[in-house]
Image (tube, rainbow, N blue to C red):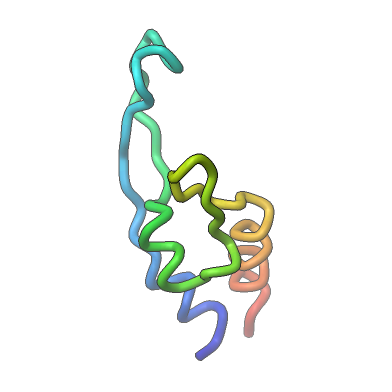
Length: 69
């Protein structure tokens, strides 16, 4: 499957950080680490029992998708 097709499977979500991290509780956009792990497992890592996205790796895939012909 082409990178473009894999990136197209990602569904953006909206979320808020915990109040301690963002007292203004601004709405943010991004991707769920659980979903990213199913499509790009190497772009996700676990820290203190929490899945997190490696933004650099995911951005690399998105950039490849943009340049995929």
